[in-house]
Image 1 (cartoon, rainbow, N blue to C red):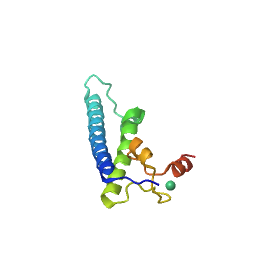
Image 2: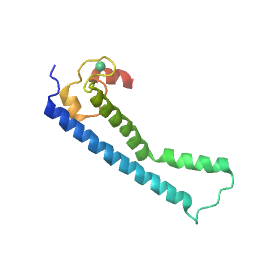
Image 3: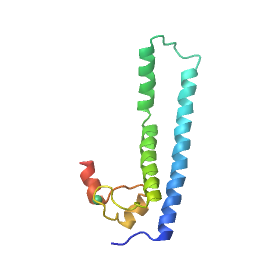
Image 4: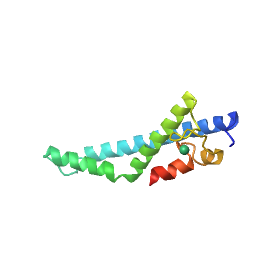
Length: 121
Ligand SMILES: [Zn+2]
């Protein structure tokens, strides 16, 4: 089993940091557009606070892209945290080293291929 060398690790860290920035910017942009929508004066006035909450939740949940970004951001942050504590590249389930090509393809991968397919079942 090959393990990451220092150069690869540094590359992956940079990739994760970049990805984190992009995701944060995207999520911020989505949030701003929702705020603009909510403040739109032409919008129908909703008096019922319950209906208002429902509408807002619906808007946020229907934004599949924002949800994907958020989910990915959670994974990217977790990967950076594992990198900081030195457990990056080890499967969070079985503790074995994750194959290097898998990490290079999915820098935020937390599980080896075997555990990931178990997890997704
Ligand atoms: Zn595993």
